[in-house]
Each structure stands twice: as structure tokens, then as C-alpha cells.
Length: 105
Image (cartoon, rainbow, N blue to C red; front, side, top):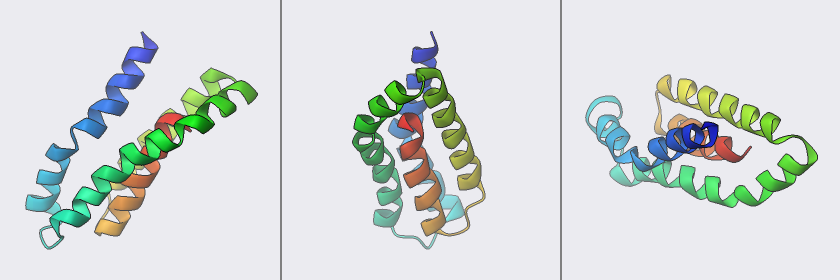
């Protein structure tokens, strides 16, 4: 059950980025280019898949539970920080980079 919830949250946010991008383009970052906002949405899944190889190493060295807990804390913190972003580069660091590393931290 917990694996389902983890995948639901992680992939749900990643695959629904188009909704975020539309909000960012129309409401929050009106002067930002679409390509800059698209880069934020592409960075998350890219980092998520690249860091997957290291997740197994961390899970073997520590416990799976501690790795999942660390990833959950990173993901939650990244989305809270992304809500406070006032510039696109801040959004890229929080929602793009940190959230992408969170699921497999």
C-alpha cells in the first residue's frame, strides 16, 4: 500500500506538470518564457530517473524505510519552497531539482 501511495504522489506531480505550467504562465510568472517553465518540468523526471541507480545503493547501505523517509522529507520541503518562489530560477531549483531528487534520495 505504501508503494502505491509513494508512486501516486511522485508520478502524479511529475506527470501533471502541465497544470502547474499553465498556472505559472498565466498567474505567477507571466513574463517567463514557456521554454524556461518547461525546463523546470523536464528537470524533475530527468533527475528522478538518473538518481534511481543510487537509490538502490543507499537502500542497501541504510534501510529502505530511512531512504523513503528522507525522500519524502525532501519532496515535501521542495514543494513548500516552490510555493514561495518569486523567480523562475528558484522554481527550477526547488520543483525541478529538489523534487526530482526526492523520490530516490
